[in-house]
Length: 429
Image (cartoon, rainbow, N blue to C red; front, side, top):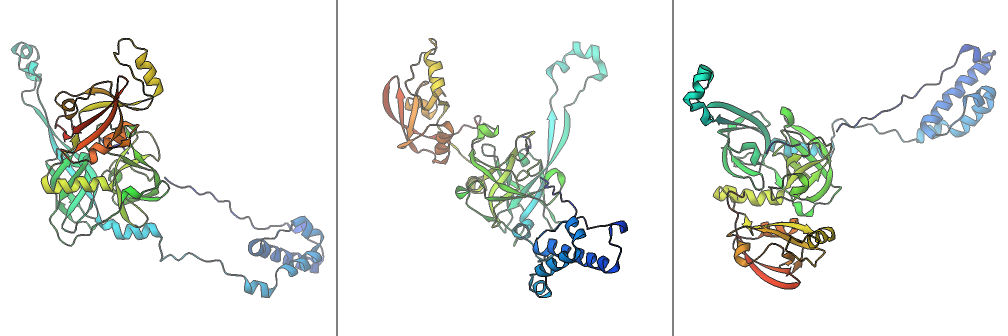
């Protein structure tokens, strides 16, 4: 999967000082002095008290303006005015605090893989060679592809979490820490279904992140991304959680089994595998994808999902996903009407909502349980479901061999059916 992935411009207008020409000043010296005093007091009023006096009023009523200004600003009043606080350059904010604590645990991952292009069979044909001679290659073409991504250390002994697409098929993996150390990395496991991978480096007492709870996220919360976009190491961007529960089909990766976090924190190629953090510095997601051509729309794998997959990868080197073996679509009134008006469909759907089974895979758990195309699933384990993503999430979170109770509608009749989940076939993943 290719890597898919704000500057705030603040304009301010300068405060123009009060200016005058000599020809505009009164001819006598006292009036000139009073005008200048009035101008001085006026500037104090504008900056300190917020009152406003016009220049024309001041020019025609110098003494009155002077007295008026005295009534607004006195030495005592100036003494009592609170000083404007100045920024303390030695202090940061919550973002800098998070970066200081978490930054050392964010790493750059360099992966290289050798890709060999096989020669077409036609190149071995003597007739073909007679015409093209030495211009025909005789050996397979090999090239080395290199890529860079991000990751974060989840344990002090050197376990690192990153995206599967960062290291999938890699011959060599190197990990560079923020302090400049580079170590050889070993891939413990890769799961293309969730795009999660675990790498191990040799070390002890390494800086490690703290994991949060992605199930408690709400749109509008702060989000901080750290990574190495476009080769720019240790880049920090901020934003908010824009949404949660984005389905794989909404993100544009329907082959993944992930309910994504959406954020407007800037994510670019190279951020893949880096952490998405909350305001407390806890990892709440792993940055993984963007919508090409969009701005402020990035996606992260929830850390609860990534942690669950990582535990299995670190233990067994693989992940087995629960599987029903059906293709399904959300049922709508429009779809119902389209199906029933098609004489060749062979179906009679009497439900406006639910999950329509489009296809049942041969020899799958669903096929063995008796599910058929045209069945409308209304409930799973006693809970109503109206969209395919919710059903898929229930299946994904279940254990292999679990019995799922389905309530469905078939040809105007209500049915109840038990389906025992199986392991997702390798070719399907």
